[in-house]
Length: 415
Ligand code: NIG
Ligand code: FE
Image 1 (cartoon, rainbow, N blue to C red):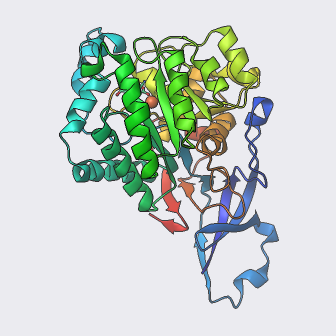
Image 2 (image 1 turned 180 degrees about the vertical axis):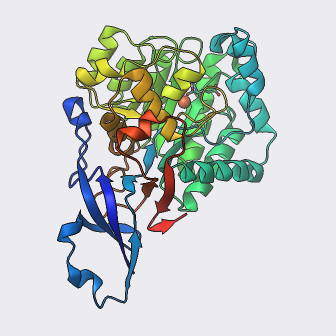
Image 3 (image 1 turned 135 degrees about the vertical axis):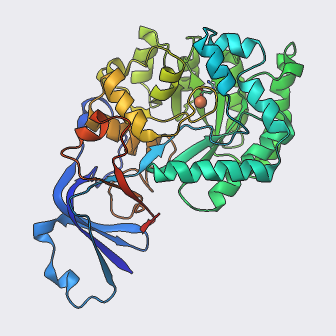
């Protein structure tokens, strides 16, 4: 079954190659104006300018369905490479505490934050967690997300971490969109290990990891490398243990403090180093010279009233950067990637073209999905955003908070 999509005002991010983009290349967004696109068996089969569309394709082809895009822009779906989509409950009581002046660290210190989420998750059944996560997944797909990474990390016990990862595995098995799983057992020290960090690290290494590997439940290993959470040395040890099971690191670093997370991420060859709100000059230089992607999460910085990551400095010094939502109940209760790209333009001075690349092809790289998704490339999945009528690409980011998505196509079908 072939589908011809014609009269596309602008086909965005058309690439023959899947290279990770850095420096000036991030601002180059190849587009075709007045274009057509051919989709076959859920994959991108061809594209070009309308004036080069061969009449032979449309005449006498009973297998062909034609869709008139009527001047829509078509973009590859967003690749959201950092989320905590599986969680038990929202935490708006902490939101109020923060309005009244408490910091993220204050809330964590009084048993709120991640431990609060872990508490709620421990008493929720796998099925109930799955249902709630699936609903969120459908919601973000409708907002244009076409590939997603999801972390564990609200379990913090062998049983509950496995429960979370099984939920992610079930989401993956539905084959709605590509899903990658990261094991984040090292997200916080549970209360019973407050004074026994070594004991919890042993639990991660000796109990959690072997069980996860046995059931093949994770693709990446993540650690929250942060003051009051996991030190750089602890992060390294946990990553190395995960790497023995084939899990590549993908880390939370430099959110609230700079304690050697960037060096550690580079040392363990992390696919990405995420957050980056608190970056020293040396951190920027180091990351820029490395193969590790710097993933920025503007909505988390916004929600926590933190300084935004130094996107311009990172890009200008040659780092490969990605943008993601960090969807979670504590620091970014939104998985809306349209807001993420807008905020990156408005608050981080990224150009619209840079944000599209950072949230599509570079996001795909940050999940190691660059061969499947993240650009309009022959053979990639037809996960596409059809916009409403817009005057330019920049309008998408400029007109923040407005829903400019008309339709979303996943594997060649409108959802
Ligand atoms: O990425 N920073 C660590 N983890 C999450 C927040 C977790 C939470 O507060 O529940 C984040 O921002
Ligand atoms: Fe996170």
